Length: 212
Length: 212
Image (cartoon, rainbow over all chains, first blue to last red; front, side, top):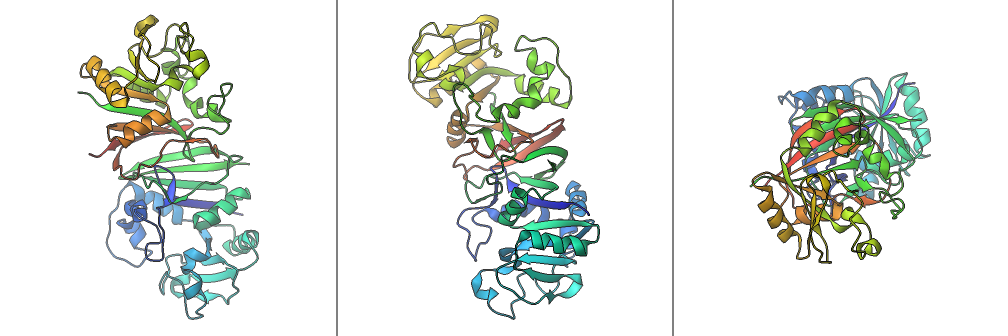
């Protein structure tokens, strides 16, 4: 099988979302700045159906993170919202009609639901019996390619804690959020090694491998 | 005047010392690994009076951090130990007879004490009236060169919080400590920009400038 990968933008003080998160401000106060390095990139805009954008050193990093991914795994919140919209059977998440994944996406949830086929090759599958089952299903459809954990941080932490992540990349944004959601919980048992570092405008990309 | 600088080794999960710190294990469990990238370097061993050692990409980073420093500031714990040894007037800290600073060092403390002149150009001055006074004195003797805050993290945080740090460098070690002393406290007001990144064996060096 391929690798189980994870990449995320993180502040210099270790937060993946700022304080005071709400439905109105899901990334918390200041949290949007975590993604400032990527939202102007052509490599990010293209899969989101947007034209134009910049090309810089980060382009190769984004291309690499999107290449060779056969399936994604994400938490319920990342698919779309709290219990309110979730109960609406017409609710298709907040990724729009043509989500940027273009591959099967396995959503961890407690609420069973039929698969949801969107435009552009994205189908959401809802998995109610835990992260290992979601991974098994994702690995099967990925057919030898990698599986990417899209987030959120709590989902990634579950895979880290279970020793299942093979490789992860941090996009360290030059901001201090002072509070919010920390990426790493109680992972002191995890041994890692640095794979490569890329300096780019307004961000540092560091890839690590988990030693097993 | 020169810049007020600070550099420190930090784990991927944001700790500058591990959990369960003690006099026996001042960097906490696993904390020694933060400095694995530097202790084998010739550039580190030389100022510590040790022969031999490696030369690699980190050498230029260490040389740069030691260059153009006219004075150092540190906390009492970094000078040497808890209240026990401190009360002994013969106690000269735990840096040995020939400390690696080779410049005036201003020690923040509540206990007044005469200056302590060591071999090799290091003199410890004990400052009892706060971080700003220590900085004023350090700037005066630095004569236009930079002043470096040596640590610990709590001392650095005081200078960060007062908006006095001009530039800082993180040496991100590929380890997860899972607990201990976090580098950054409540610094969400601080705006920073990335200056440069260096990939080196077993560490990523990232330099930031504080925007004022």
